[in-house]
Amino acid sequence: MPYLMPPHAPAPACTYNPPTPTPYATMSTSTPHVTGRRESDEPLKHGINDGSGTTCQALTESNVDNDGKSVKRDESLTEILISKGLQEVNLISAIVSLGEATTHIAVILQNYVDHSYAGTQNSSGDDQLHLDIDCDNAVFGAIREAGVFAVAASEETPEETNVRPSSSKDNDDNDDGPWYSVGFDPLDGSSIIDANFSVGSIFGIWPGKGLMGVTGREQVASVVSLYGPRTTLIIALPSKSRGGKGDITFEVTLVKDRSHWEVSREDVKLQPSKKVFAPGNLRATNDNSKYDALVKHWISERYTLRYTGGMVPDVYHMFAKSGGVFSNVSSDKAKAKLRLLYEVAAMGLLVECAGGTTTHEFEDVSVLDVVVDDLDKRLGVCFGSKEEVEKYKKFMFSK
Image (cartoon, one colour):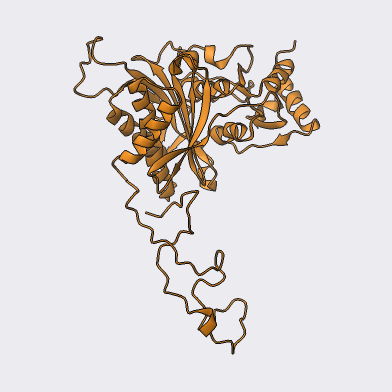
């Protein structure tokens, strides 16, 4: 498996140990160096990295697990969650299991070379890659092993699936708990992954043993994974999950040969305004005049465009830059595609816990107050800085 260099590696990574360079004092100077050709007495790594001649670390895969858990990784994320005020043991285990799923998906993506389709479609009618299914299976494996989830549903497996341990009493409501349910998108951005863009996973955690009839407001946590040059998690914990200590959104990064999580952003906050926009489903501007006017406003006001076509990297950019606005608006000819259960609710909790605002595309209501009355329910949205979302409302809700 190719090695993924940690973001804070103390020395450049390599897959071999070069021979000890000849001391410069003893090198021949009879032949001048010619660009593009290595002289016979030139050190092997001359001109590469900083030219210091420091021997590269001998890197191994001893700290990278393909199948099993890394205890150190579990412990590091557990300690972080406790430090953020989380006390409920099963909820800590639930989030840690999503960290494990994220780690395994990162390995899958790093070794992804098969661009073939599985011959099936998800609930949105999108053709499924084998990769989509592999990532879905990685999440199901991790959450089943956690032993704290009762029900799970995903974009690729769009039904309430019993994931409780076989040892639990399926029909006994008084068995050990508390139990949690999770709705997730295992690979958001599979349509852009062939260009090697950043992609992600989205997870919403609800208390109890079911997902039908819930609202995003009832979530006890949400987690989004971002796979790019780094592998990161951004985690939202509402005040009720922290003993009334207030909402928080924070980021952790997978480091040290995937053996540890470290806090990389202590407290993510969205500023009230920031002139950065990510306009999804731009085809809708063709027959949605209000959305067309809004996009033209952003352009005329010289907003900075940050758009990849993937919901996770586009919304995540707001967290990294402390503000902005993300929209995904529908029209008669360009229907809404974002799923409330698998994508919108979890992302909405992250935004609101970071001090931002969310709204349904056509109604002045937070996406966290929309009821999941269909596991495949879809809607248009606007997320972001409070003042930017208010501007959205002025354009889109005007008569």
